[in-house]
Length: 403
Image (cartoon, rainbow, N blue to C red; front, side):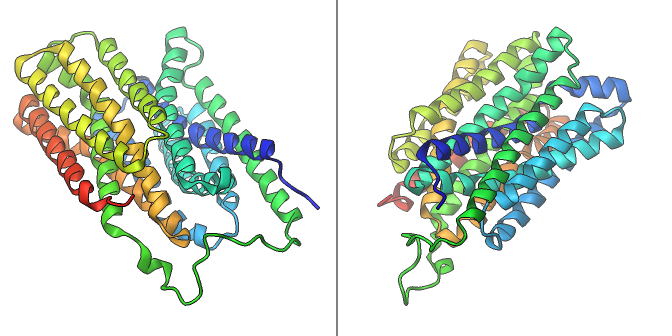
């Protein structure tokens, strides 16, 4: 008889989280390196945009297909292991990307692997969580996302500053970490196979006899509020990363791009810290608190933009990030908590689809900026974002009753 000790489950849970983090690191690490690729390969602005679009399309394709694939698999590790292998291959290709074709291939594989790993890792974390606590699994997942988003630019930026093979070394490290986590998933599969002859333990997630199908039990209104939250908050975060230095220079007179880079890193760090601090807060309270803080932060940011106050703008970004961390972590936990077990993978994939769709907003905002100017684009975006998140918070007060 083969059993899995609590210590072994904890180690495997950490390796799953590490694998998801490595996938997100692989997605964000190229950001500081794009000027190098652009100079070395002679790429124009349209081609750089195309590279970003290829990555996002690959992620969305993986998210939309992996939810259905998960429904046919007996273990999430059957998807997680190959997903992490794809992440590793994509990272190794990026380490040797000396042409546009290799760069596109590396980003496409990174996107597809990240999308599949996101869905599979969420399911694996539920499986390995203490007492199958879905909110604990969601917390680990969102913290992995936040850590990966912060570590990626830091890793490649440090390699760039220290001149340690910046276009090679970060991706080799990412591939190594992804392979270690993939190996852990394979070990989980082997352990499951050894226990295949044992009678299954009674599941508390199975519906009672005669109950309605789980698909009818999906609470769509709360789910749409959660998906709307990740859409608008990720749209804000991606806009900050893509256009923050430009807006900071044009609207606030910040000539040192390193300052805007530090503020962006602080935004990510504050959001991840907020997720951790809200880990024991009831989901409804954390969600409402997060949307309220974001709204306040946007009001202060509009004020800073109007009167040209860089210090207030930086403070408002940190405040907005604190709200983002609380709302995003709560939304991810609610999706896992409210979804019927046989619909969880599908709804989690749709939840992250909404987030990656939000990542396309900077492209639209860039076009608006070219046509109407930076001030009109920035203020219009901030007002629309603030109204959206405030409306979601107001609807959630009724939609999340009893949660």
